[in-house]
Amino acid sequence: LMFSADTSSHKFRNRLLKIAIIFFLGAAIICSFILFFEKKYNGKIYPGIYLGEINLSGKTAEEASAIINERTDAISENGIEFYYNNKSVKIYPIISAGEGDMARPIIVFDAEKTVERALAYRRSGEFFNDWVMKLSALYANRPGAMIFKINEDEIKNNLNENFSAYDTPAENAKLVYSLPIGGAQADFAPIFSIEEEKLGKIADYGTGIEQLNKNLSVL
Image 1 (tube, rainbow, N blue to C red):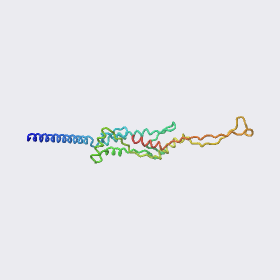
Image 2: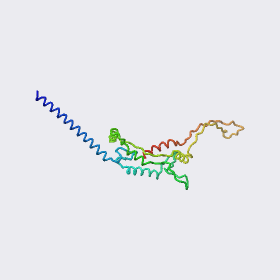
Image 3: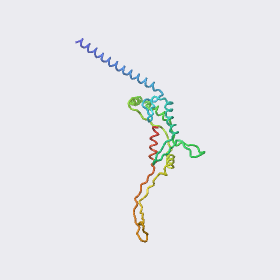
Image 4: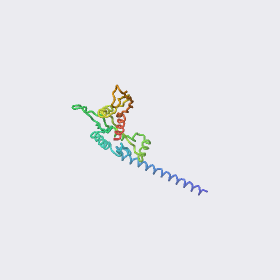
């Protein structure tokens, strides 16, 4: 009986030892992974951060700013094209009212704040929540948004100046009359008819501005 008890006690201690070894090995692996991960992305944007289709993962602030500025510079140079009634017009982020007038921005991109927000993501200081988000990025990307400001009134006025000529105003139903062919008003009674109302077509600038905001947010 004593021999059986010693054997059982020895097996129990062995099991505890194995559990402890597994626990410490697991903890060591997790700690090593965390240290490696944080060292790799120190001062860099964590994986899974996108701006539209632009992958900012692993980029420093300077690298991310350069990528974003390249996109915004292209928009400034080429303009943003609007279409209405088979006509098109380009809106540029910086416009001038006329010769000799100072240029003024109607679309302002803030690459610096956009990059700051991307760098701050998953760095809230809450260890557990931050790591849940970091691990989730391994299988799901996190879309970001460009920070910018637009002068909606200025853009609407610009579009109206270019597109208003192509609007079709609505017309109410009205009573019209005509004389029979070959007749004179003294001999023939005029023919009366009702001309149906006509639907108009006016550019929806509000929807256009809404779509502009969506497009600019992802460059």
